[in-house]
Image 1 (cartoon, rainbow, N blue to C red):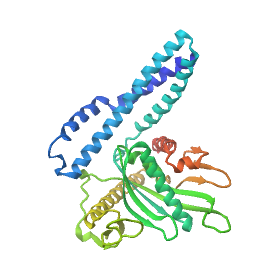
Image 2 (cartoon, rainbow, N blue to C red):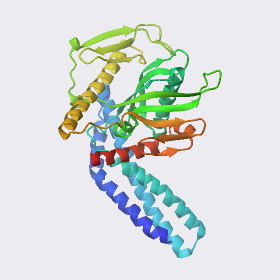
Image 3 (cartoon, rainbow, N blue to C red):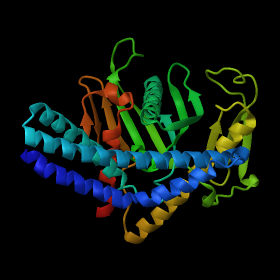
Length: 368
């Protein structure tokens, strides 16, 4: 029982710190306020605001439920350990030992969330995946990464919306842009930004040779009304074209796809996954605003780094390797976190990499 006597107070301390940082009372007060707003009869007269309110309410409630659920589990574990100690029941001891390990993992994962204190960390994430060097293998790899992130979001119950997918000719995708709608989605997924590398026997090579291919992941915070990013019409060139790739009704039949070029910066965004030109234009503008917001953030950071005499960091470059041959391994090159089951990673089990990345980034920021 010595392990429990030291482990339980450690978990109690860690959970109490999380509760203090998160401020459950403030969260519950906001939930009550939002609960009143979402019951207003005219709520859906403004669909965008309604979606924002309901998404915020769902996210807050989920966060509070996670923490209170862990508190209940920890209290139950204390009782279980006391009973097991009194009765010397080996089955209860085994059950308590198993629950202790699960609670450790759950609390450690939640503890990482308290490290997300960046300016935009609480926001939804806008993610773009691009095939880079490696030809058709790179396009296939980009599609694998797209599925990986969508599966990760699905596992957590997070909403997603794909704005644009550019399909490659033979297999895979040239690029895709999608949004993950969840509290702290940007803070969590921002550590995924950079170049990902895949090493495998190419399924597209008749001679069965090993191929190395690359895909880039860009993660941006979704803009909000308070960001005040005004884009003059004169600064944009807007082109419409016919959607390409797989699709159903209204796809490939009209010029509904929209491409926006921001003339001052040369940034180009497109959206073709919505049914109408108006919807695609609105979605493309959201992506453009996110990129301009991130550009402004990078410019501010560059100015600060120049003042500090810091050349900046390179964590946005090559950051993870997925090796399928001659051995099986996925390894983060920054944190050294690795797993030996690439299939599980490609199926969305990337929380270990995200948590390690968040801790690593906090250490890097502290040393800067």
